[in-house]
Structure formats: C-alpha cells, structure tokens
Amino acid sequence: MGPDLKLIETILWEDGNFFLLDLHLARLSGSAGYFDFQLEKEALADALSQESSGFFPGKKYKTRLLLESSGSFSISSGELDETPDTPVKITLSDKYTDRSDTFLYHKTTNRELYDRELKRHREKGFFDVIFMNRQAEITEGAMTNLIALSDGEYLTPPVACGVLPGVYREHLLAGSEMDIKEKVLYIEDLQNAKRLFICNSVRKLLPAELCL
Image 1 (cartoon, rainbow, N blue to C red):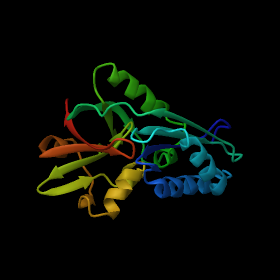
Image 2 (cartoon, rainbow, N blue to C red):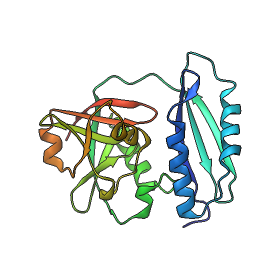
Image 3 (cartoon, one colour):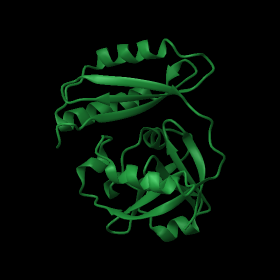
Image 4 (spheres, rainbow, N blue to C red):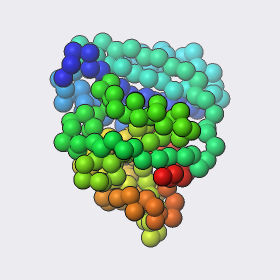
C-alpha cells in the first residue's frame, strides 16, 4: 500500500440532506479498518454539515471526500450537472481485472486502470465502460454498478467477482425499490438482457445501452 493512498466517498446532496450518508460512512469505516486508517466520524460529520451550509436549496451537489491514513480528510463540492440523456451508452473494456485484487473491493485513489479506461471511452462518446475479470465474468463499470433485467429478474454481479460494494447497489439489494438478486453474468447475459441499467449513489439508476 503506497503512502499516498486515500479512501474516497462521493456523496449526493439533495433536498437538504446527504443521500445515503449512513451507508457511505459505514463503507468508509469498513475500509478504514481494513487499511488501518484513522477515522473520526463525528469530526467528519461536522465537516460535511459545514460544507453543505453553503448549498442552495433546490439544487443538487456532488461532494467528494478524501480520507488519509492519518485521519486527515479533505472535502470538495460542486453543483451536479444535468442528468444525461438515457439510455446512456456503455461498452466493454478489453482490459481484464483480477478478482483477487484487494483494491477492487474498496473505493480508493488506487484506480489507475479505471480512470484510464473511462477517459479513453468517454472520448469515444460512452458514459461508462464495463469490466470483466480474468474468468470472463462481468464485474462493474468504472463509475457504476451494473444491473441486467433477464427473464423477469433484476440481476447484478456478486461482489466476489471483483465488484466494489456500491452504496446505491447496497441500497437496492436491501430495499423494496427493485427486487435485485446477485448472479454471475457473462457477455451473452448482457446481450440477451431485456434491459440494462447502471447505478451509483450520485446518479442513482440510469437505463443503459450496451454497444459492442
């Protein structure tokens, strides 16, 4: 683990509150424990409250939190841009991930592959790029989790495939908004799916179109 490693949480503020804040802090706390980072939850919550004090009601903001191993953190925010037209276009990366890679399961600044592939495919007009692991199992997007509607069921790849436990993904799995199940998916499952979606806690659920 490099000395410059930081943990990341990107949080949506809307309607006067940080969306799914408890889940974000729980994930951050779990990763902090795993990597032996210091974390003062009360100080962080106070700082987030202070950050949002300048937000305008009726607008949406994306707030990015970076936590260092010492417990020091930085917070930055910006107004969220408009929701893209849907279905958003997604494609597959030709770079494979290794499901034994610890960093796939934690949201950190160690994400060079994802950042590079996202930039490359954004330049081609795609909203996100989807990865597979070395076993050819579908995993996730550079910024999002993936959901496929197949045979009347909403399916998402299991975390064990090498998937970040996304906050909105967890919200959907635990709630009644969508009846989502975990299942190993392959390219043909995406090609044969009735509908595809990508999701994260900032954009929530976006219909998607796979372009190969």
